[in-house]
Structures are given as structure tokens and as C-alpha cells.
Image (tube, rainbow, N blue to C red; front, side, top):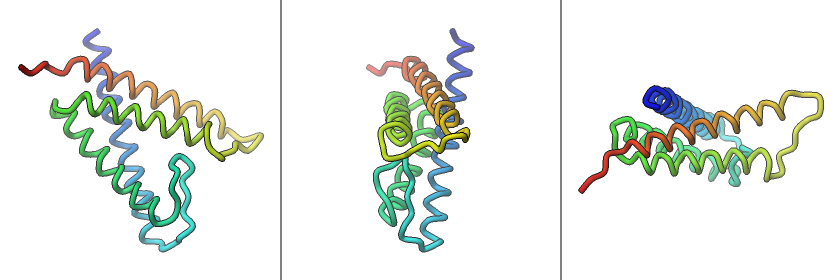
Length: 134
């Protein structure tokens, strides 16, 4: 179980770190381009508020990944991974987002959900390994 915990834990760190950097990049492009009609279907906001939310979520994600890697707040990192999974599920399957027939959008969505689920499993295994404090 130790090697599986290590592999899934590293995967979870990588997934959430890259996800946070992706959000940061999108927010940066949105704020510097000056377009007010920015929409990202995974999240419920749009326009400038969306860009600021993305920046805040990216900062929180990066901070939580770094703290979890240090060995602190791993249980909060697990909650973060659940929030990311919920946002991905909501964005693809419980929003106005629609898949274009004849494209690979649906399979991409399923792979993204699968990747987020694996990251949740890795974060859970890390949270279980967190030493108990007295």
C-alpha cells in the first residue's frame, strides 16, 4: 500500500498543481486581454469576476499543494480535491455546457473526470497518512 500511496499522492500533487497553474494562466490572459465576455463553463461566474475568482482559486490551490507537500493541511488538501472534482462534474454535466456531436469532447470530459477522481483518491490517501497531533 505504501508505493500506491506514494504514486497516487505524487499524481494528486501534480494534477492539482497543474490545474492551479492552468487557472492562473486563464485569469492572467482574461485580465490582460480586457474582454468582458469571458466565460469558463466549469465555474458559475463570467467576465471580470470570473477572472478574479480564477486567480483566487489558483492561489488557494498552489498554497494548498505546497502545504500538503510539506506535510501540513493534508486533510484540507483532500477537501480541495473534492471541490475541484465537484466543479469539473458540475461544469461538464450539470451546467449549460453541451457536447458537439462527432467530436471527442465527451471522451475528454470523461477523462478529465477520471483524472480528478484519481487525484481525490491520492489526496485521501495522503490525508490518511497525516500524523495525528496531540
